[in-house]
Image (tube, rainbow, N blue to C red; front, side):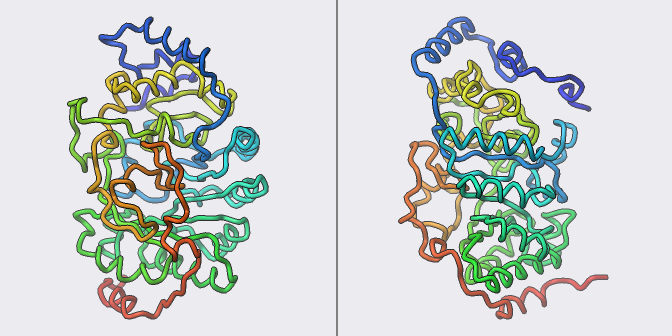
Length: 397
């Protein structure tokens, strides 16, 4: 069924946003809560970004249908598109003045689909910002790789969820194992040719029933070649999947830290949402292309969201209340060589700038693994592990 929100023009005034059904007002004194956040607004105006990172969803389009991503629920969940270059640049100018230090050019989509991605990276670098993208590498041709390196990209994280053709293509549906593997190895060769220490390269792995037998092969193959690897258990993606158990008991839940300390999340059309897990814009807090960012951060709805997390009133926001990020999940991180922090700390951190969202602490770069801090490592594409992969991969028909 088509989402009714696709049929109407959304308003971003607070009266509309407070009544768009993303807040559960049942059983609470609405007037009292609104009076409280309005007084807070008067007493403690927001003048800068609390977290120095802003995330721009350059597009929500993707060329894959990975089984752990709820793209099936996304197709009719919201409008789709690619972020306008001019609006992006105006927004970057604004957030720089508010204290932004890093931008992530990724949301619920594959950023290389945006033909202006290199321009967006270059514009941010001209403003003195660090840049970061997350990609599946299937479109990382030599031309695009050269473009993002020359544009000045600082960090690149790749999702790579199969070490044999049959496992990779059963998880990352719609992509070709051979093409992606070739792209990544070519990228490493290109970076070496150019003598560049940037972008740092990290490859992420999710342990799934479909690929768990490849996990050790993933580590054996990629760890010597790139700057960092991480191995995780999958999350639920909000309401999109059910890999982790959900609980109704508020007593075992704690804030994920994102509403208070998380990066500003701007979707391709300018809509501001609480975090990247809100893949269908279930909780819209404003529009950064139509309103000043400080107005959005200071408004009643965003303050109500922060209050709900501070005071464990998660039932006010049903989308948050069912999210696995409120539940202790130290076991979700299986392995990382990106940094040297304990898992209990690591699972509290943003996966981009490693800001501790729960305890409101920036990452100390002395905790980086030395290889990741250095930025460039040797590669050997003719290793024994490459041959193992070739032998285990079925031939094309």
